[in-house]
Amino acid sequence: MLLSEFGRNGRQDVSKSRIKLLGGIILATVIAYVCYLFSMQIVDGYIYSVRAAQVTTRSIVVPPQRGEIFDRNMDVPLATNIDSFAVDVIPAEIPKPDLDRVLTEIGRFLGMSLKDVKTAIPEAAYSRYQPVELKSGLTFETISRIAEHINELPGITWRNKPIRNYLDGNTLAHVVGYVGDITPEELQTLYNQGYTANSVIGKSGVEYQYDNLLRGKDGREFRTVDAHGRKINEGSKEDVAPVAGDNLVLTLDRRIQHLAQDALGNRSGAVVVLKPSTGEILAMVSYPTYDPNVFYAPNGSAEYTRLVNDPSAPFLNRAIQGAAAPASTFKIIMSTAVIEENAFPLDATVYDPGWFRLGNQIFKCWVSYGHGAVNLAEALAQSCDVYFYTMGADYLGVDTIVDYSRRFGYGEKTGVDLPGEVPGLVPSPAWKERALGERWVGGDTVNMSIGQGYLMVTPTQMADALAMVANDGIVYKPHVLKEVRDHNTGEVIKRIEPEVLHTSSISRKTFETLQKDLRGVITHGTAEYVITTDAVKVAGKTGTGEVGSDTNWNSWFVAYAPYDSPNPDNQVVVSVWVDSKNTWEWWAPKAANIILHGIFKDMNYTDALADLRRKGWWY
Image 1 (tube, rainbow, N blue to C red):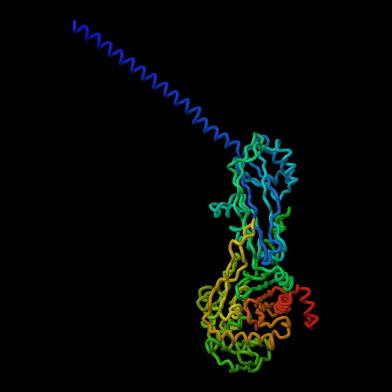
Image 2 (cartoon, rainbow, N blue to C red):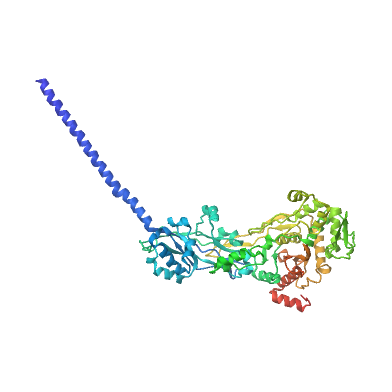
């Protein structure tokens, strides 16, 4: 009986266990289905809704207002913005059967043939959802006509793309520069700095040098669109407003810039006017020049190509990139070395018969019959070649000449805040051996002593050299940026302070002697009959360099004024170079005479020239 009862209870326990197991399986299955349904309806539903939003939401870059550029007077902007639009195509959004029709139709609105439109679209872009720009510089009226037909133009969109407008484009092109679309090569370098394929970027001048300040920060607008690309909402809380770029105030004085440009005229060359007490550049002129505004005209690309291929090189900023032999202006450096090194008594004379012999070579003076017996002051005033031949060959030597050339900053960049500056060249025996595979000879030293041979300087280096003389040995870094200001409030964000480039170890007494001798160049020397302004006392040096033949000459003149000013802030340095490509007319000192007269009498070119002529100046 006990065994029978035990059997019944065992079977009951097994049945209960099976029921529990089956219930657990059913419960687990139900839970699994519930979790799956939750995943499908809630989690996956959220993911798919996000994906759907991404498909119907477009992120549009909103370009900022580029900062404006002013001269030191801040009366009118030298560079500003004009509202304009660009049309883009997203090729992958165009159904393939409609591709030619859509491209033909948008081309009709843009004044482009089907071939031109297809040329603007890279082959790889047809399978991408990235916008490709078809044309920029478009008016609101053109965009309005396109908008009226947007249902027929899938894949077509537009955006605001302001264009730059330059006041006095020809006058300031080499300093202010211009902007253009970013290239693929530039984008590779600048992508991590926030630039995009549609960015506009500075290409030259201040626009390039300070692009990071001028460009501002892109905004972003999120648009929800329907199947036809039509906007169906009016903004999003995720929109990011663009931040305008900073305004820049330059050291340039537009009045002096115009005066210097007119004085140089249509002559290949350059003019630099700077304040030696601060390094501020008041004018920088280079000719030939160009007008950057034409790049934004309908035929802008063709005009740019023409200028690039122009043999006169209008894009070259000759003030910082046009290096040439300094000719007799180099006698400033030679005189400094003679005085500072006590290489030759200042009152002692060298006899100039019109020629100098070195071995079996004869080196002529620019005055064929010679200057007779001259001391240093007379030699500098009359620019006597034989005196400086003698100093270089017999008393200084090439190493000392090279040393003093470098003390004046020749052979290295001035550090001016403009792109593309060249260092020029100070030749030496080691350089000639390395570069030309030839040995330095005595004739090289003789030629270098009067600023000829391999020696090369820029007009800006020349201006710095005379600033060093005017400042008794202190040279301030030349610069064109004066202030950075907030675009909206005008508040000064940063003011550029004068920066000492270097301080010379040359004695003040040497500079005082040199200053008097440079004044003699004007009062009774080579510049006596050409620097005739009565507006200010001038100290300076002429230079005439032969290039190739007797009919090709570089014309140089470098000066500072007022010579006797007790206040250094009143002084200016003027450096003028007229290239040998021009017909010889000894124009550099003549241009400087007009510039100095205009600056210190507050006259423009026309009035300054007329005033000089009334006083007997016949040029």
